Image (tube, rainbow, N blue to C red):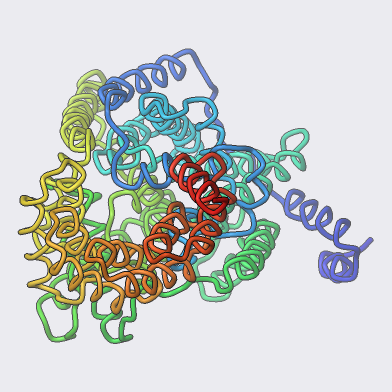
Length: 616
């Protein structure tokens, strides 16, 4: 009979498929202690149905909300969501390539795009249908949290409290009331499904290998839905370490090392899937990540404490929630912006550590809270003003909910009055959940439309350029150009090189007919963002209105060189060439527009007119 070391050596020389099967076999067949499983009763069904009903009522008004924020670009203006033939393309390019082709390629989410395509086919452009999907996903994740909490916390009250805290925590308003916020719940549903299958397989139930294979498969789906799901193997190792069969025993250094190694083994297939995913990501995106902003290493390190503290604060004290926050970069290790948040983080970590030493369940929940924060600490992948968002806490809030459930379930008993003890728990939990639910209803309301959302952003984060820029853009979309101008100018007074506002201010002046100022800012926008075709196309249109045809042609050709398939670009060049007397060149451009967008009425009419003129 082979020992385990011989078995592992044989695996290393096996064929890939056989190797995968044997790895799963080893993981599942590892000795597992029999868990204390809670029997599922009618009370569990009633609680879950009641929690789902209350949560749904909190978010019910969102069914009347509009598409906001990035919804219109990523959903309504995404041409790849119109036909199933684009599915293979989803696996070959980054997530926002159709609408932001020049953006850093940091998002590889083909499964999410398939989900969006399915929703587009079902709901079309009905915002109510998309919102219903977002709410349903959150309810599904809540049910999964309840199932996981029953297993982890080993108590109905604690598990129910954890699920309720997660369902009603106001930090989730962004993920549920905003359509594209469902990215978090969609990917988390796969991650939790993988975790639940893993725990089921570790119970040594019949068909354990099938449960384990399901866990690995769902993990692969989670990674293809959103990249930060890569934290799951670390959570599995933490479960084995704190709650698995190797979690007991002595606490000396040798036992700690042995326990750590034993905790790694069952998650080996998941680590392999993570490595394969990273390889595919590297192949498709050209790198594991791309910097969206150049930040000195010292600035990154000095900003980390305030970033982490902001997330702790949002979980523990969810007040003043918004789609935007003022979290500026910290440039000095001696500043209050570094020292005070660092102290707050140290206190929070010390409290979590002390709790983990007393309770293995608290230790696992603390790891679940902290590990999903790690991918958020690469600050270079976030544009300035985007390093903190409520939605980034969706996974970490699960660990926080487990801790909350553990705390509520640990309210001291009163042996002489069991009913009183239960009433105390219910009172404390009821008040807490009432406050959370009320706050959720309040903060959910700010997602009703863009004007409300961005006005709230400017109110909470007056120094956040993205919030002010988006509010100004919404004013422009409503034709309120004069109201938008002061917002753009305020941003540029703070940062004269803020390219988005430079471009938008130029476009605003263009729409107002103030062409000299439009030329100034659009030219500057082209210099600040030389790979942005939008600045050049509108600069060309400005020159056209100024009758500077040579400059107009040069600008539009520059835009075409950056994006030869953009809608309207060939049409614009055709108009310029026609006014310059180059009729054959103009006709070629009109036909090029029709080749890209068959049936384009303006291009078809112009081409037909030129063909008639050239035949004379």
